Amino acid sequence: MRNPKIRFKEYTKDWEQRKLGEMGSLKNGMNFSKDAMGRGYPFVNLQNIFGKNIIDVNNLGKAEASTQQLKEYSLEKGDVLFVRSSVKLEGVGEAAVVPKTLENTTYSGFVIRFRDEVGLDDNFKKFVFSIKSVRDQIMAQATNSANKNVSQTILGNLAIPVPEFEEQEKIGSCFSSLDHLLTLHQRKCEEIKTLKKYMFQKMFPQDGMNIPEIRFAGFTGDWEQRKLSELVEVVDGDRGKNYPIESDFTTIGHTLFLNASNVTTNGFLFLENQYISEEKSNSMGNGRLQEDDIIITSRGSLGHIAWYNTDISRKIPYVRINSGMLILRKREEIVTSYLYHYMKSDKGQNQILFMSFGSAQPQLTKKCMENLKVVFPKDINEQHRLGQYFSYLDHLLTLHQRKCEELKKMKKFMFQNMFV
Image 1 (tube, rainbow, N blue to C red):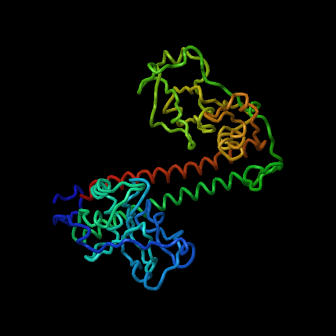
Image 2 (cartoon, rainbow, N blue to C red):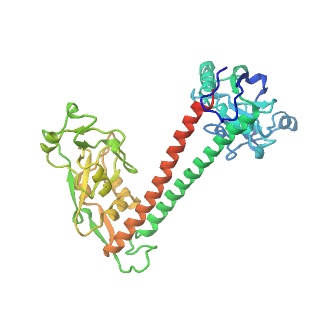
Image 3 (spheres, rainbow, N blue to C red):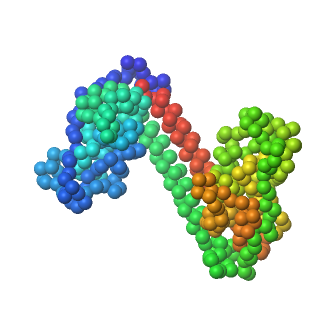
């Protein structure tokens, strides 16, 4: 059989293609009665396998079982469990490896166990059943009923690409390291999100209070509450006769015309862009961005906030909002970075949600936004410190999210090229 495109240089032997049933035994899981469920011994079910490459040991099921059943259906480290039945075709046949902590645990009748008898590397087994050539075989052979199903026969006939053991170890170790790095960065993202949410709650005054619980050293005095319209000019987009129609848009051009995908819960995202000509832009009225403007979505996906700061305005100097957005253009009393993070906090978002109307397509009017209440410290320096702090957390989050995306792309590329 052919070999993968990318290999560790010390390995040159051809890969083999072997049927799964020739490399070990397959066994359906145990069918528990309704009366046995909810108490007794732990068992692995579908939810412990979906989307994993190693069995999720959390939230195991429980069922009563006899001593003979516990022995017959017990698991060993390195066993592979396949999803036998799934509502969705994508889920059927998903596989995960049993860790040492689940030895002597049982598994349900919705699962098929493969017990390796030729000594495949455990880390290699975590990944080989997810590669395209194996998944394509499962998809093509899964049977239809109320659910999608695979059988021992189908799994036993799967053609599995197998290199020599030492190469299995290297491949398994490589992908395990990638997964470990990805998990670390994903965990860091969640930690930063949790910290940010906590600090939002503690660094803004609670309802009825004039000062926050946590404050930077050196700042004292009560905070102030004002209407948004007293702090910024709320600018609506152009909806007149010169509003762009489909034929006005191009994939490259002079002025970026923002669409819903450009303003997200995480700020600006410039993946799917549409442009209008300079002439078209000049023919329109309100809606052209100025540096330091804040943009908020006012129709459909409400309350997405983006900040047209110096870095972005230098890269994309000509930008207009569409009719489903509003611009918040500051006056001297408020620091933009502070206002940006306040609008993204629960205090700002809860008001936006309360003010919105319409069920099919929720909307937010300019007048509603003008009446939104903003609490802020009177000291401009404290506003700057708060804005800088939350911007720093956003920066850290972006770095870890970007690393996650890079690792996912790398893993996908390596999957396509390090397996047959």
